[in-house]
Image 1 (cartoon, one colour):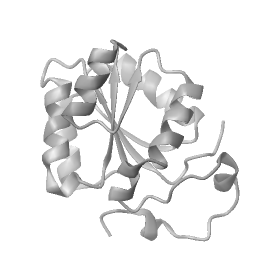
Image 2: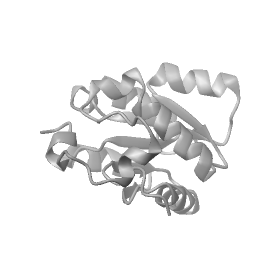
Image 3: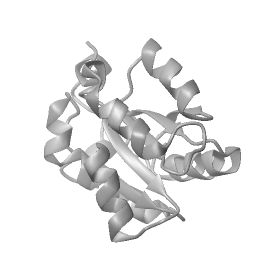
Length: 160
């Protein structure tokens, strides 16, 4: 297991437990060890009202609340402006990706999600202008996170 992103607190949202388990396993493969899961948008909304996360992975194929609609709600919520949003979809078409970005996603992943593509997406996301909304330290190279950081977790949390 890589230890590239051990400091990030992540929320994974999907209505299908099997999809959540697969995403959690891939996140663990790239070193994301602080992953919480929400089975659906309503559970996620409750969790997001209680605490903040660095990154939220949102499945677009949900029945309870449309994933695109949920992304829009997240992007408009002033308390969640520093949270990075990643859309995850079974449909990897350009149209679906564009819809996700318009709805508020900062990044897009199509299933099946490989560990390598997830690592590349996270690296790009953490170095993107979207990451500057919060206080996430940009990732300059994978080697940077293998050493002991000279910052504390308090400096990384956008909620102070």
